[in-house]
Amino acid sequence: MALGLVFPSFMQVHQPPSLCSFNSSTVRKTVLARNSNGQEPSSTGSIAVKEKKAFPGKPEADVVVIGSGIAGLCCAGLLARYGQDVLVLESHDLPGGAAHSFEIKGYKFDSGPSLFSGFQSRGPQANPLAQVLDALGVSLPCVKYDSWMVYIPEGEFLSRIGPTEFFKDLEKYGTPNAVQEWKKLLDAILPMSAAAMALPPLSIRGDFGVLSTAAARYAPSLLKSFVQMGPQGALGATKLLRPFSEVIDSLELKDPFIRNWVDLLSFLLAGVKTNGILSAEMVYMFAEWYKPGSCLEYPLHGTGAVVDALVQGMKKFGGRLSLGSHVEKIVIENDRASGVKLRSGQFVRAKKAVISNASMWDTLKLLPKEVVPKSYLDRVNTTPQCESFMHLHLGFDAEGIREDLGIHHIVVNDWERGVDADQNVVLISIPSVLSPDLAPPGKHVLHAYLPGTEPFGLWEGLDRRSTEYKNLKAERSEVMWRAVERAIGAGFSRDKCEVKLVGTPLTHQRFLRRNRGTYGPAIEAGKNSFPGHSTPIPQLYCCGDSTFPGIGVPAVAASGAIVANSLVSVSQHSQLLDAIG
Image (cartoon, rainbow, N blue to C red; front, top):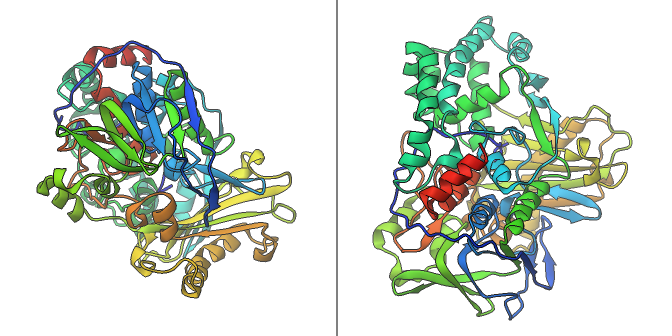
């Protein structure tokens, strides 16, 4: 969904910044450093950590990574596999950042992404996260399925992926020409997918070594894909780096339902409509969802299993993870990032690099003001932000609930307002349908959310203990309650829920360390591009949703991989690509 479709190989090749390389062949002993801390439960089950004064383990590493989100763990895992001594510092006592899972009363909740595909894919065309997991040699068992329920103003239907399954929905909700227009769209963009998938994201790096690891290595497959597409397809492929709305407009698609549907798919993928997403991303998604044999995948044991697999892979190669270690500032010595200072006062040295998995705004807060160039400061401060989230986490009895419930439900209240309008689209995940161990026997676990559309300004400055705050929570969460009641139907009762948790933008800001609780930068395709991974400060790099390729699980996994690849030699990088095929 908006937080996390696992998807593609990106066509864009980032203009290489000047990144140094370093080499090491030593594989170090695994250490998992976990503090024993006092805990304060949050409104979404996250934990505020009271840090110990002494840092556990060796207070230095080749590379220090700030934050254990998907990007930080992908980056750290690959660097560990490359033989670097890596230490990940996480403020909370659970890894995973916005993708972490947590448990309350035997219910195991996902905090973020829940709709995935491509976990089992391998080779050059695999999605970025699958490639990282493959490189780390860890498996991720998944359950396959092929549909989700959709509730729209016109009615409701079970949406199945595949080349022809959507025709019946088009015949019911579209104009008489809807099926023909849909076929026209698929005929135009599916041939383009070969070009979109020809350059594996794990081959990309942030220096001119990319000419060897990506351009030269995969030029034959890229050229072959253009030849197979023919002149018309090759011409269409030139639009891969343009907004997807331009592809739709060029095909003169008029059907309102199709245009609304494609906007919804774009929003689920990247949190923007078709005028804000790169065609390459949508083309890959169409290839994954609308080809024969397509399927979706949900990780057994929840999305926390994704984080566990990344941590396991990092540890296998000697990486360290220190939980409950809140970074207070990045230390600059001799004009270079030399390490970090923790809230406890402990200095942790980074001998070769500091990598921030925090957002661009939160990374800026960690830097001494006097070392930040005005141009960099202005760029960060003028970058627009996506809005925040509302969350509803529920644990309830399955008795009286229909057995064909399904894991995913999408509710659109009003097409006219746009899928990106606040209080308009509600995403619901009931993962215990596919992975029963996520709830006690005979129970279900549910996560509903408003994805990146909740205005932070409504909440700014409120006291979380105040009546005003509690009343606003009740008011703004009502749309999610109604969506849940519509999706589950008879047998569900609010009063019978054993766990009821409401998360707000203030929850995001406080427990996920997200500036204004934001989903990430609001950067539209064709108008601007996501920043690279280097910074004006030597030995300080960034990964995550504030950097290229952007927002979402596949994008942040790719960003972490790009930074890791950029910090080792071309030879080491090439050896990794050879190893994973």
